[in-house]
Amino acid sequence: MPLDPQFRAVIDQLTTAGALPLIRETAQATRSHYRSLAMARRGGGYSPEPVGDVKDRKVDSPAGPVPVRLYTPLEDRGRVITYLHGGGWVVGDLDTHDPVCRRVANSVGATVVAVDYRLAPEHPHPAALDDAMAALAWTADTFPGRPHVVAGDSAGAALAAGAALRARDEGGPPLAAQLLVYPCTDPGMSMPSIRENGEGYFLTHADMTWFYDQYVPARSRREEPTVDLLHAPDLAGLPPAVVATAEFDPLRDEGDAYADRLRSAGVPVRHLPGPGLIHGYFAFLGVVDRADRRSRDVLDALDDLLP
Image: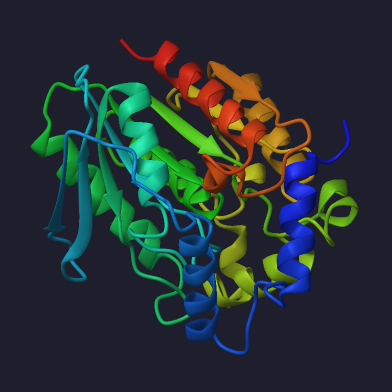
């Protein structure tokens, strides 16, 4: 399928405006640029999707307090989701992913605990993953008895997958499912799509190289299973997974391959490819029709997995 025409128009507009490439001179400048892009997507008439309630809290961790934001859905069906935002482990925050968390909460009938984990390069691996684990434990303690999902998009999906591995190996908390939306699983960037889609589709090969250099500057640590997820030696016993990928994403093949590896390890998997879509399509809710529809398909698949 060709690139969705609405996405073609978005990419052309961003390119003409000088908003691409995404990476700027420094991590701080890139954060500011990414945040401005995220806010601009909402348009002048933007109104946030209504939810039952939104509260900001802080979670204790060995490294200090971790900010979280709690979203109560309009219809609470007794689930809870710990959500880890994307942004290459360097950019993104609670505000950039606010529309996504609202959609997830209402679509699945779950309280969403969005995590403002520490960012690289100031806090390289495993700081973000440690914060994710602290948030997982807090969520499990605060909402006992609820089916608990770990979820994320892009770098956040990689953190979610890494957290699922650690939860399995460290004795919990127990997880009912994992939601991985276009996850980064291959720090070696060895799959064909990183080259085929590495230019001209919003996220680039050069972006990913820079993100990994900030997040895991010590190359020896890129071999750790929670970073090199695609080559993790043992995926058995992980929670059921919904894996979403996008046709024109540099990370498409590694997301597809991770879904295959999970399935081969005996993990129940729902894999939803994204025909005509680009990396980051969950951030275009209400802007690109096909992205909106596919995001609902992905969340329906998660809903089906949960009691």
